[in-house]
Amino acid sequence: MGAEGEQEIKANENPRPNPITGSQFLSWKRQKDAVASARRAEAARKREEDIAAGTAQMNGRELFLHEPWVFDKALY
Image (cartoon, rainbow, N blue to C red; front, side):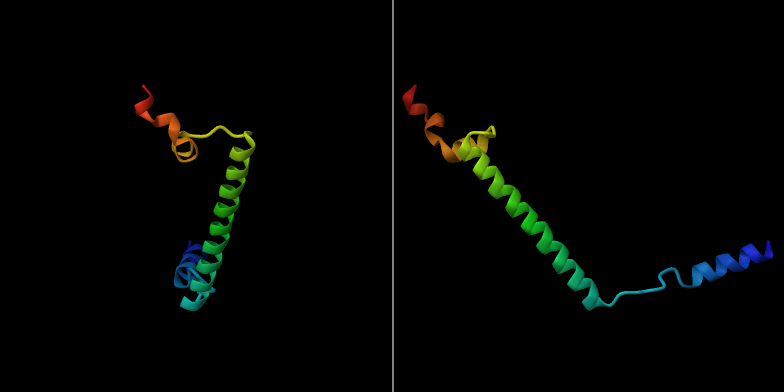
């Protein structure tokens, strides 16, 4: 029990052996956000291409933006 108790105390003294600085965190966060933004932009671009080619089905919002005459109630 003595050896286990000493190991627990040592583990609790320094839970994060390599703390990062604020600037390192901000750099990581900016890079992560840039990658996520690029991924979203690429997905949106591909979706637009697929809709234009007719290979993807449009949702209601996309249909309204691309073909608003479908929702014109003056025709009825």
